[in-house]
Length: 253
Ligand code: HEC
Ligand code: HEC
Image 1 (tube, rainbow, N blue to C red):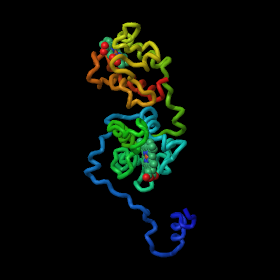
Image 2: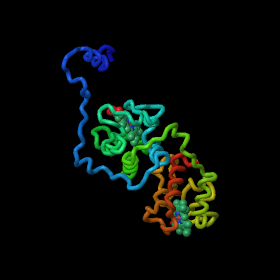
Image 3: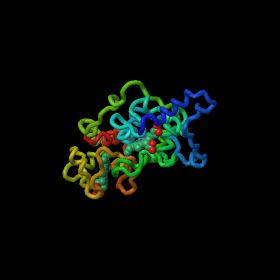
Image 4: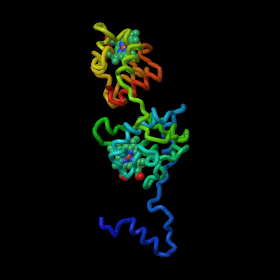
C-alpha cells in the first residue's frame, strides 16, 4: 500500500481540517441483525458455566489456531482478556458482558454475519467444524452470566488430564467389570492406553485424540448412543464425562 494513502493517514489529515464533517461516526456502519435471525440463536445453557474448564478450552480448540499467540487473523487475539474483549472492526464488541446476542463472537459462530462464520468453513477436515448449538449455548451462558475472565495466564490453570493415573482409575471403576481381560465385551478393553485407543470390534476407534467432537466415546458415555447395549451401564456422571472430554481434547496421552 502506498503509505501516504493509508486510511490512517487520510483520517489523520482530515482530522486536522476544521470542517463540520461527521468524523466521530465509525467509518463502516454496523449492519443490524434482523430480529428474526436473532430469534434463531441457540439458547444459552440454563446452568452456571465455568470459564477455565469449559469456555477457555473451547476457545482454545476452536479459535486459537487463528486467534491465538501465533496468528491473529482479522487482528483478533482471544487468548488474553484484553484481546478477546476487543471491539471488532465492523461488528461491535467481540464480547459484550451480559449481552450474548450483541456479542460478535456469538453472532459469528452462529453464522448470522455475512461471510463471517467462525470458525470459517473450508479448512482441513476436523479443524473448521462450526460450533454446535450446545457450544454456542455454552458461550452465550458465559457471556450472559457476566463473562468473567480471571486475572493471569489461563493456560497454566487448565489441569492436564492423563491416562495415568486419572483416566485409568476412572475407566477401571466404571468399565472394567465388562471391558477387561481376554473376554472384554465387544473386544473393547480399558486395561491400557493402547487398548482404549484401539477401540472395539464393531465401533472401531471411539477416540480421535485432540478432537472431542469426533470421539464417539463421548456420545456413548453421555447416554446419547442409541445403539449401545446396556445404555445404563455406559452412562457416566457429568464430572467423569468432562474429565474424559478434557483428556481427549488434550490429546489422549
Ligand atoms: C481457520 C482460521 C480461523 C479460525 C479457526 C477462527 N477464525 Fe475468526 N477470523 C478468521 C479470519 C481470517 C478473520 C478475518 C475475516 C475478515 O475480516 O474478513 C477472522 C475474524 C474474526 C473476528 C472479527 C475480528 C475483527 O476485529 O473484525 C472475530 C470476532 C472472530 N474471528 C472470532 C472467532 C471465534 C470466536 C472463533 C472460534 C469459535 C474463530 N474466530 C475461529 C479466521 C479464523
Ligand atoms: C455391565 C457391563 C458393561 C459396562 C459396565 C460397560 N459396558 Fe461397554 N459394553 C457392554 C456390552 C455388553 C457391549 C456390547 C458388546 C458387543 O457388541 O458385543 C459394550 C460395548 C461397548 C463399546 C463398543 C465396543 C465395540 O463393539 O466396538 C464401547 C466403546 C464401550 N462398551 C465402552 C464402555 C466404557 C467406556 C464403559 C465405562 C464407562 C463401559 N463400556 C461400561 C457392557 C458394558
